[in-house]
Length: 537
Image 1 (tube, rainbow, N blue to C red):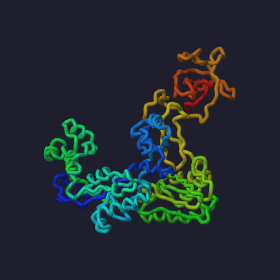
Image 2 (cartoon, one colour):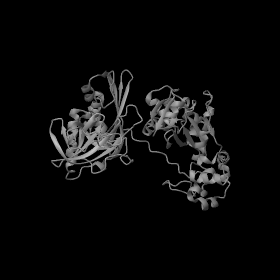
Image 3 (cartoon, rainbow, N blue to C red):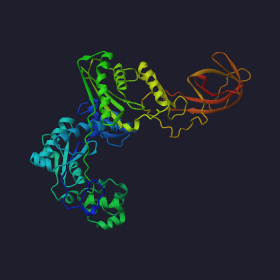
Image 4 (cartoon, helix red, strand yellow):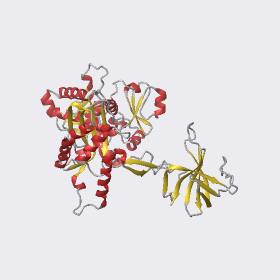
């Protein structure tokens, strides 16, 4: 039976042939750090640490030397090495930065399979014939990748993908002058022997690995010595696949990627332009070409990345989203807004623009965005109207409200520029003790209105530390001196956020009250006095 079919279908791990095509795996260690360092333009020895959800996701070698390891809390990492440079981890940046590396490898050896950002594989037989041997081909790839990405690239060559991956990981380049130490070649037919001493944990399947360890199996060689049929009976198809990997027979089909279409548009200005209208006029015709190229490929762009280069070497980039798809005029508007560098866009450059690059960040099939035979109702007209207003007022001129998590009504509101995807920093699904229950007020004031709440005898109503109301609220007046009689009230409900911080706003008390006109109010008492925060319409 063939190891892989023309459709890349799954095959029986025990029916693989003894000889498999040789595979070259390229591995760029610490790729997330390398990509982020290039993006931030930091020196190679910068102690960069990437953080995800408050934990260290990846750390540069200089940070690891000071005890910073993956999984540490950021504050603990900072206590171990106060000099670290922390940045949020961006998986999209990994993929985007690895694209030039893939293109460089494809120039040397066609048919690249991407395993993950920082690691890819190619069949090495043709390259070995062309470059004069497998090692010569590997060194050629390493030199090319290091030239593009300035990384410590390694290569592993073996009969199967799994074996080649771990061959690359077993390389050592302690001596920077030793190019040969960056390549590990497993001789043909020796995959099982090479894998045998590796720990069973490299299979990366905790449920099965943990059980095997309890059974006394700690290496791949010990696992491979088990009978294949017994493993299949006990652990099922997944166990049979892991057994094949440990035996040096990889059932995974090799699937080379299809190189993406080059739809980027680059406009160079000589001399550099320092006026917004000049830049917008200069890219107008190329914006038409950009959209036409997408249409020819039967695609539309729902997100684009615009990169601005200045003549002084500064680079500013931003990803722009669109609620539908970008037209040529939309592209020109985004370039103009980015050059303007408004308060919402961190793209202000101190010198003239020498280059503009427009990249389709996210694309979709054009058929999903076709207008119906009789139009699509009111939504296209609303979009057109808001887009026209936004083009006149700027990117932040039209804002759309969204709801996110929080305890106060103000904290739950988030305004996003029209066309941008709303990214909620606080999930509404998380538990928020003390949050105002439904039904919520119909009108939330953009700024709280100062009010006065009085008891029957005219004294101001107060609340003590235990939440006891000094006297029942009887009336309240607004800043316009209009007085209202309260016919019903409920509360108080305490709210204390971030009480451990010195700059904490302190405890506040919320009341619900109904006046003599039948209107209900949400009133808040804090250190600054009484406030009307919302109205139940």
